[in-house]
Image (cartoon, rainbow, N blue to C red; front, top):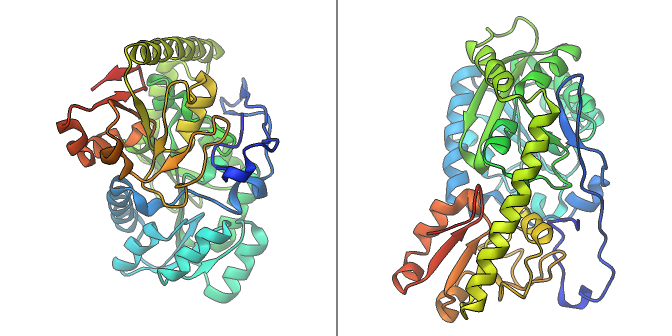
Length: 383
């Protein structure tokens, strides 16, 4: 599979595009689900094309998340690891918190700075944490949204956080929840950046080993179903009954059994067959189809299923960093969303299906002209 956020310029289309194995492994001891092959993070994150601020859904999510975290933990310095363009930290700043962004992507860090968010352009690690401690002091909150699951050295990640946390502070990490991924067959959330596919059970064991305690967990609908875990120093916070509730749910779902993942794989193959059949039928009827959204998950879906120019004429995306480039692997051109009403395709395949409601609302004019939407997950359907 190519690196799904490595978009290409036209002059790069004839070059050899690097591809890497994308095999998922299950630990029979602790229940962790993770990739077996690790791509060097510098290849994926130093020049990045995802920005948080393009999504209304994410902005609302961050408002809710920040309000909850401040209510649970209190005010002080908040450090956002992989804080992207600073959208999340802007909410904390409004709530009266001091803010600091640690963002490895050079181009995205510059956007954050332009938003007047103090930003360290580096990968999160112990040495960075020590520098922050010397220059900023300890933190009340350390957050990581869709970052923790991207990290290979999870021990180092938590060790760096422990250096900086106040005694009653919390590390709050959010990531797609394995329960939702399995329930909804969200196979396209599996890509090289996402090294871990996380449930509560292995996290309780993991944080305990590193001298911390999981005290709370909160589920969210964002990104097809996510969970955020609050970890504190032992005794610093009361353990929520939600932890036991989620451990019971995970056991009931069979997340500790390899057969669960074999069944998941069988469902993935069925989605591939159904979506190919639908696209072939529409094309044979002379229908024109474009893709909406060029997210990482969309590139996984297109490359795994084999959806290229034989089905889609092009892709549109609101993110200007992706426009006028070509998608990894399938090499479909990416344009601005204005092209939809200029070109008027018959169907839009919503590749960013986790934002389907937002997208269909924004594209109401397209629907009024007779256009229809295809949502591929959890099973292909026309809306």
